[in-house]
Image 1 (cartoon, rainbow, N blue to C red):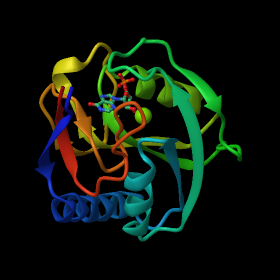
Image 2: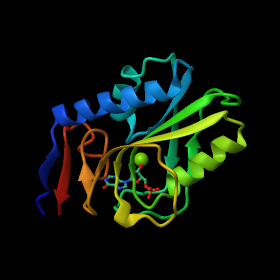
Image 3: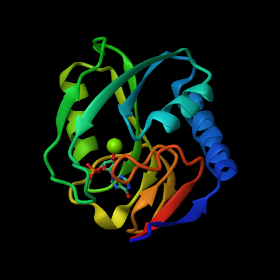
Length: 173
Ligand code: IMP
Ligand code: MG
């Protein structure tokens, strides 16, 4: 079966929105340093682009979580499959995530980082699919609110494909 992708936000639109988010985050941080936590692999493109737009001192760390297999349905159970390199105690932490869907991943991560003693946990998502939320999680910054469709590109995959598309698109199966 052919997989058809329709562009939803162009590369220019995404980058422009990331600049705005970076501006807001910089204003909120008021010069304080921040650790940007990139949730691999989906947030890799977004987190790096976002970090470039933050004017406070930025430290980066990366982690792998899994709640999804190669399919399109969340299992609801989140585990850390590759942890951060450095402790976050006493730090401002900004979680950069590709998309919030059921909310399980971000709920788990925000609680985990609070337990680890972060000074402040901020959450920035490139995309939010509110219709799919199963648990409530406070999200500080949202790039775009999207409908309940399967999204690929700009880091988001379908069975590991299409992460490298420079735009955000919806996928038709
Ligand atoms: P949540 O835990 O259900 O909020 O799911 C978050 C994770 O599910 C994201 O980090 C993505 O990796 C994945 N995900 C959710 N929706 C999509 C989508 O439309 N396309 C690709 N991946 C998705
Ligand atoms: Mg992900």
